[in-house]
Image (cartoon, rainbow, N blue to C red; front, top):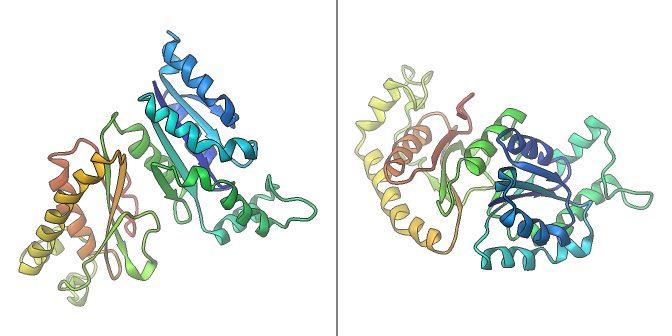
Length: 289
């Protein structure tokens, strides 16, 4: 069986992720007590009903606190039994979650007469830490639209084959902030910048004028090759330690030219040897496939 555990703070997008998995054929259960997870795994592994071949379960702050504390033990038992399990943890910045609750006027599950919404949001992160620290993939949804989150879940969770590491190469602009879920961050701002050429400024790193400009710069090829050499050496080491997901972020100033060009070049290189490689450009519109 394939088991996906979806967790995260309230307002981070857990329901959206679970709905995506349900649309993709997963048997989904919302907020199953952690203490019943092993029984679910046991029944799903022996049941002949094909619907239980793909199971997704959400676990959040509504669960028993004792169950959340024991989550690492459950996770370890799954791995010991060679269960194919992925733990997805969704989160967002405190201010973002605060705005989302104010806009929807929903009640936070941990807020009460003595605990404000702001305090509940902070406490929830502490409560869910046993799950967050065991997550295979953490996605910060602060800057994601509903559709971008759906695309990421499809590509990274549903698209990953058993025992295969899923690689995401993401370009970004430093002036917009470094992606909080990046495992590796490479700074390419030292390369010649097409932005300062008025004839190139309106193009991006996916378009021929910028591609031709950067491909003609020796520094661009050197930078790309050095990053590839580094990742070629270390990605297999992470895979050998049972790492399932990796995000490689490549940044320039605005995230329009140099980072996009190198992200495409390096991502395509690794797609020749890895079946699950995605390329995403954070600062360009409509690039999630």
